[in-house]
Image 1 (cartoon, rainbow, N blue to C red):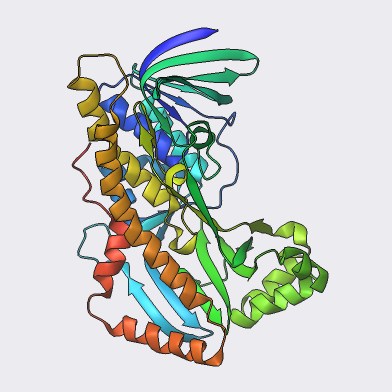
Image 2 (image 1 turned 90 degrees about the vertical axis):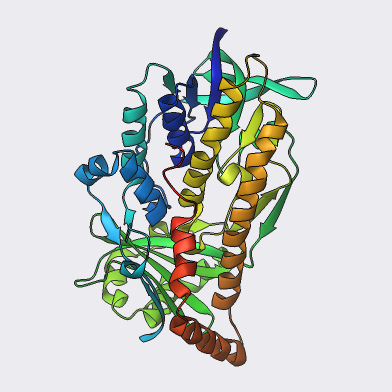
Length: 403
């Protein structure tokens, strides 16, 4: 078995894990990122990066490199009942200087971050490598054992970071208690070519208790999501793809001819099981969870990537303090890590509660609920502080303090 000594080993090379690896390397922390996939070249559902995270990537000097790859500027959020505008937030009205989010293939983002991190000699990344075991002594985590092909690798660490997503292996190995909340509906995703003149905005279209989430997708596509009852995918398939296309086209008529060409069978769509997780504690001596591993969120408003990146940004000063201000080589203390956890839980609670309110609004069924949704969204649209709420969702924490 190969054995390495590292200050930090991050399990998971998604947006949160990769960014954390780069930020720690910049601070002189000896860090390794372990990623189970052999490469980043695959399709992701979440490819929108919110305005606040875009601002931070710009401060790191990465936005210009991402621009070379190409991306779409997402500059508004809109909600319609068929063609009747209920709510609109135009990002140019943000007080924050960053006026847009971006949609960009996630592999390009990850590779750009990793390329930058590999400029630092204190950064390593192991692809095609899986976490198999935590090294624990008297309740403290001292490292992690991983497997790459047939070879076992041991990392002796001050801190293991679980950034390995909604089905986190690290979370299971640490035996953290997690509450899983399943929603009443599942989400069906598909892609369509962008109609001529389509606005670069994240759009929600509602029709009674049906709704569409429509996201502009680089370079010239739309990602479209619509809900079906929990466990109703088989029933929907039995009704046939034509009925599915008609349901979508009732909400957005311009999609009708496009769907007839591009959505010919159920092989052209993907079903996403929607659930959230609430992990009782994210940390113990020598271990911390971030991103979906700690707090899987609803896909409403596409906050998963943004929140994972914010976790990483917020966590950096705690790790730096723990490593640099403590001469011992033991695990970072849970007391230090729980300070981070407490702060982030408060910030994530705001996003989670907002998402759950929106999910309830979108799921309106009765004529009264539908009418109340219409009244509520139009009233919200007139409120002068709506951009403050949207800015808190889009920009989150104060950026730039932890570079």
